[in-house]
Image (cartoon, rainbow, N blue to C red; front, top):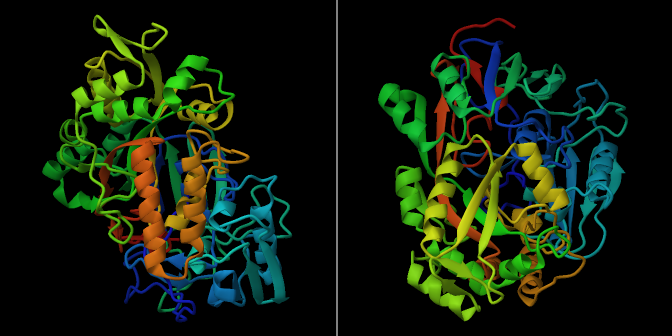
Length: 544
């Protein structure tokens, strides 16, 4: 799930200066920026990223044709100086920046763009990026017109086609390394599992600032692999870590009292927390449980039994809002304002369960076969927020006779279960949402790998999933913004009615930024604190 843009984009971008906009330059250059990722990256290949640590590495080391400014939410030229959308949105022509070299020194040409697009589109790679370029069946093609001009064609028209290239890192067609040579501001220098990744400044990075100084200003970035949030907070206090993304509410409030200038509440993020049930037909779970999970009345009852206001108040200390679907209130352009968060209604939950054939046996809910309703919920270990959320949901479900077993596990094992073995019953995780609906193709289309409750379907297994497929294709190809909005409004209505994900809260974007850093510009869109990493510097000269 890659990070993208909010507003419709111009077909022909204004050619902007690729330099950093800060006048006067940094007070110092060099030095090592440090922050933490909370798990091992599942991959260092930027084209098959499915987890947040891998996404962080891909953002810092990858270079795209275009770049979204996370503050203005406007698209800017990057490796492409300008572009033209052709054939009503079914093709796009990029004119490339000249004189750019990969981290290994090889020149960047249109052949590398074509190679990258073909690689991403290869079905054998299973790249989630391909879903963002596919609004229907058919091939994604790249045609080299000259060393500096390339045309990419997609199966059907895509609204905001240029914006789909923000998260696609260009890689070298000639590189023999794994991962291949890239074009981002940093390169991977060292990876020690369970310890850290060290990224070094890319000496061949193409950008310069307004005074002609080469970017990035920093010499290196150290990403500590650190699941323990308390240790991360302690190291931030000591100045050993410079950035905190996704700060938990309790820590935020504590820091706000101790060092108010170091933390910021940016308001509603686009992210959400949700639970879902495993509906994969071949999953190694009892058939009767799969029958529960596939029953929409069961899912609606679970949703009605959860007190979201309590979650916002007790877990997030007011730094969150109850969720009514996949679109956050912070996403003003796309939210369906007719939808309201599900009300806490335990009695309505009991009535729905009775309608579905469940009944109370003493204090225990049983199904039509007399089996007690009990299931396990997997989530990632080490997150106090999710531990507390799960504990409150456990209490809420106990009130309607359901026993919930919470199973925290390390992140790699969790990903293995929900993405490959399907050996789980229910899961609670966050969703890193993207502003534009096209970026959610890899969630809502039934064939997508991130269609978590039942991924990689050869054809839609339910009529409502078939409708989701149709609507997502419709909004992606619609030229009229009103038609796009209407189609995605309907997607949100189906999600709220069928509840494949039971959305819990939309949390605020809470971040920490060390006062030792210069030119920090935290934004609601990810990556919140380091989206402008190539122009970050330290306040005191560090030497290069």
